[in-house]
Length: 336
Image (cartoon, rainbow, N blue to C red):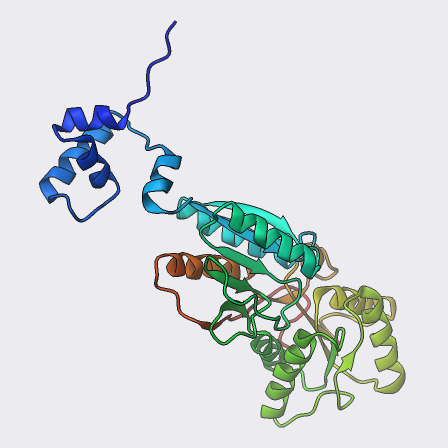
């Protein structure tokens, strides 16, 4: 049984009563075609179920309909939601994405950038493993948007997270719950996010006329082990706290475990807030963990949209910050 032949551009032109060149211009939205003629061509294409050849369209438009994604943390919980957001936006824009993992290696990143440009991608999204500012790649052959780790280049386009706001809203929530003796336990002090989250929390606590319990935030590691150790340290040196604001969900999980093992009721005696809203930790904790959601998929979607704007000649330099929000669960309740 013969397979039905797919409609060609010549078939569309014949049905619409125009030349092949005019049909091509109409389908590619060129200005030189009259509105009535364009409508006739589009109707013919619809009637014939015509599907334009992707390679031919790319040759006409000078675009390939693909973008490159270079990540430095493919296994990480931060990069994956960002990549999903980029891919989601790309799909809506009928773009394909080519993914490369640089694994935190600048030489590997340079290799992937060269390879992707060789494949004539229309633009690039560079996803960082941490949100500390990174060096600019300079001028490439296509537009570039930096996601999560913003570029230091003033002419570059970046989309990242407002960590300071995340720390502030976490502290404001604890204050609204009636907590006044708030200890801050955060992560690795070499990370800008650890300081920004703590600074946001400190600002909210100071605005309420208070100081953090123990005077200063406790910096350590992004781990459950550090969360448990921090609780032991607080109990030994500054007992009496009624809330723990944690720099990550992993830290908060360790805090919850240590408090439970010490016979401290959460949230009746002590409220606990995490950061990242990582489902496997937040929803699976005992009790479930109130946490700050950074909306990483939104970061990815905004990065993709800014890239599409730049591809269309409407790119604007600067850093865009996506604000976080609080997801309430069982580890915090008002005391009143």
